[in-house]
Length: 303
Image (cartoon, rainbow, N blue to C red; front, side, top):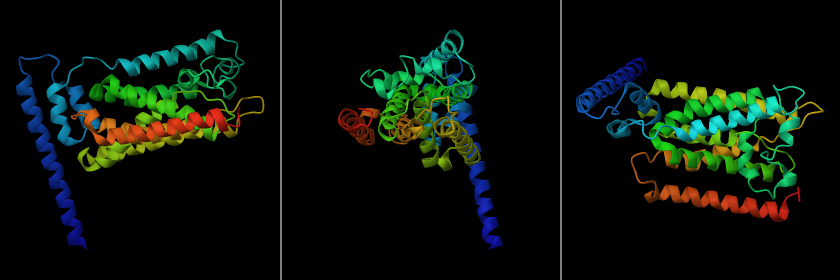
């Protein structure tokens, strides 16, 4: 047993040494390739991003064509919009306290409200409104820390697709499983990014630096537990004079990310529209959307 354990340890050390040597050789080649050429070619930040976001076989391709154009505009723009709406309701709308918002946001034209489901934009615009400081900070930190590197690698169109798929899935799921409760926050979109990234790390665990892989999974789990704890508190333990808010968007956003998000993020160096997994994920997603629309029109208790 001891001999077998020592043999496994030696194999792990050898694999890590080989991986480090390969990365050093690749960085040396990339420095030679980029010398005197395009100033946007691989920088230190992009090498770090590639290690966190991509399995080893795809890093070389990313570094060969990496640049800062276009910048991560989608995630930054969404974050600024969410922060601006939060400040508006916290400062300019009447509130008993601005740390946990109630009165102002419940009258907002952005919030998803069961009584106003015919205003279809609310199924998306609810992501702009947040229930308090903890809510807005948690979502902003996570979507910036995870979303900016993802957008650097996959660009805004793909990241936006995953994010909005999570937002829509969140509101539709809430309208089915928690049909009488209001919904606020960008957690559906944030959880979609986390779900797609989580699946990518899980599937390519051995290739995405084992030690960092464990740390990343633990970080994701800690964030999910703390955020879900706050969502459950808002739903079930809100004071009598407060307004409970649905948490179904978290779960639905995560599932959207683990299906559509994983497919999108795993097709870095491939044509997304030619990948059959993408169309299978889209077909399943659209089937769920159609069912949710049918439910809201004919079966919802909120009717």
